[in-house]
Length: 192
Image (cartoon, rainbow, N blue to C red; front, side, top):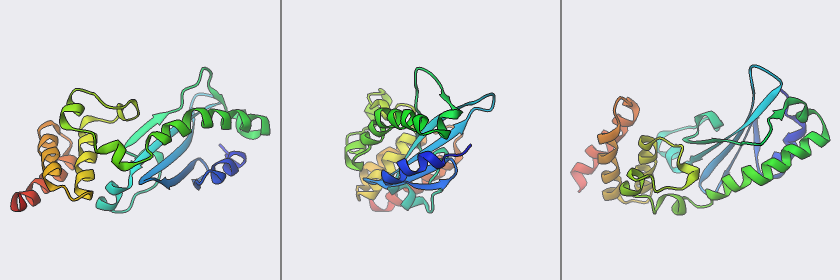
């Protein structure tokens, strides 16, 4: 699947092309990623979205900048599927661009400030699912991990500790998150 014609649209909007089907940019403390995925059973494609808070990337090392690796993911939904042929004509690119402006930009706009997204999240709000639609698809453990890392990035070890404690209680078999929560609890034990 070629995205040569849509490439200029993304570049004009601050994105870098990572591969033929992947675009990304860093904006307002988040990585925004877009992926064009061809459906394996036919001539249609999907537009997948990813958002990843950069404070998580800084604490865990290098990040691939692909939608599939983002903690927050969504898919553009339309009344009809995107036909693959749209990618190969100027008229088709206009249709795709219009859908991106109407559906993708508003999704990314929600993530206009790390503080606005994460400062108001509490364990109670997460537990009661009193959270924004844009992050509703994120697993509870992953969301708790992001909140813990957010508070660490802001120097609030007490709140990070509380999220780590809660995260450990709900983690189940997710070994990577379990290790992350235990690490923060051990670090906080000497400080708090």
